[in-house]
Image 1 (cartoon, one colour):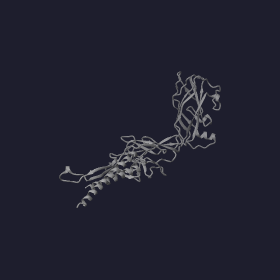
Image 2: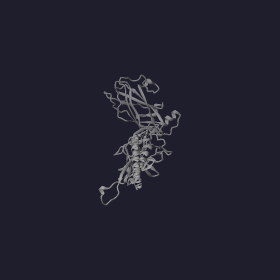
Image 3: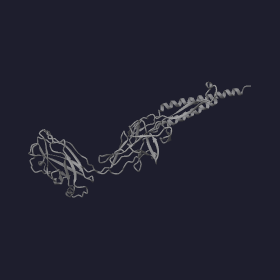
Image 4: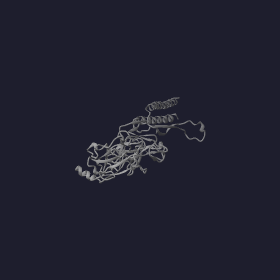
Length: 420
């Protein structure tokens, strides 16, 4: 019987060495999960004397993958992503779904996010407003076209006007004459075509206590091209309390005659005219300190071209555009399984679900039991090279010991054959 036992031991040790060798070979494979050969003893069936049975060897009961977390290493590719925690990326190859821990992704010629095998990364799409739509996961595609411009509709200005100043020496306002106003500031507005227009605001202290007039010009043309609520080129009064707080109802309805501006500059502008916007001086004050602009913000922008990508910890992919805007493009989803060791290895760092693994549970990163996403990083193989080398030595000794039992049994049989 020792021949059978020794042979089973040799086969088991050889299988164990195969598993160890595969682990070592993939010690630098991104997203690889080490395997472990698990053994069980073998006994012959018997109706009697069960307690006195001698085993007939060993066998490999399973090769179990160990889904422990691998180290995370930074990379220079913004689309390289690593999972820190539980979960798998969900991939699609013409509808055939697989799963992986290898987050080395890039864009194909059509703008789809793919892995090295050309399989699509799937996730949640966005609606027209850039909001994530948690629906059936679909291949994620990066739009390559420019984003449309947005006309300025709101302008917010928070300013302090120096209460210590007196009315200008020149009574009639003239933007070309600095002696006709006390202070000025400028901000860029955008029309429906994304063309920038420089709006200059001028502040003139009046003879009336706690009152200032505000004028405006655009693109250096005549003040009559701008209406701040009281008529084209007409001053709008800003009144303040004795405590320096603004006492004029806000916002002011403003508009710019873009057609006349283009004519004055000898240009052609097909944007919507007039450019209507609300001007809100809320928070503006008149204190005994120097003129200062705390904030000057508007909500328009010109067209923009994709200049970069960023992936958040929640898997949301944002596009950064040349006009300073950002847009949600989609959200990478993760899949989890009740029994990940039941997944079927397919090679190329891919698994497929099986009856043993159970169905995939799909969700956004950092929700439920799913891990978080780390961008510009990859998950290294979880193979412990030192431990594998020690295991190799142990398995080699087991192989040698089993070979020795066969050799010893052969020697015993040879002795019996030589009896006379």
